[in-house]
Image (cartoon, rainbow, N blue to C red; front, side):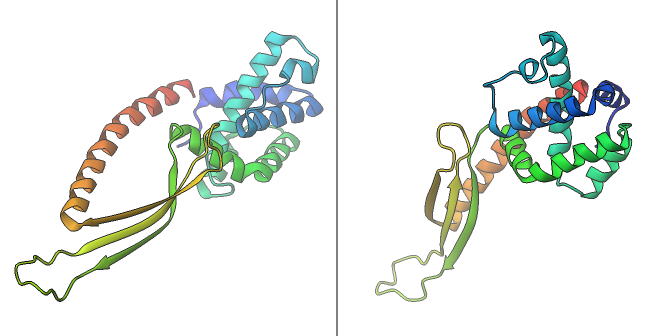
Length: 202
């Protein structure tokens, strides 16, 4: 995904701002995304008109949100940075701020895109096969055991980790996989609409 000319022209307004104020604007946008800090307004921080502060804030938020979703320094990130027409000191300052907050920004922006759903990690699984039974009438069915953690990052359960244990046979697991595939296809349709709208905004 490459920056559009419209996006570049819009954020270029930030390049004309005084360097000290520019740094405060970028810091404010990063803090807003990572901590959702709304205790103070940018107008209060910069001591300027609210309408002007709101305009600058939206541009900074747009800029930080776009670059914050990339892994810092990867090929696509560097390609997009090259399109920015900022002065070298402002570009360097922006990259410095992004690098210092890249992990938090990427995590927070990924969470926003995921609609607040928990994500799993530390997946372990085991496949058990019964090789003997006292009764011939008993059907041998392989069993699948899974263990994973669900980590929550929403405002009410931030940091909560829930361990999930799952035991099932192949038929049920296959059934579950098909249902999940269907649900994901539905989510993809909704996500595509979101991406389309976002693309129109950029």
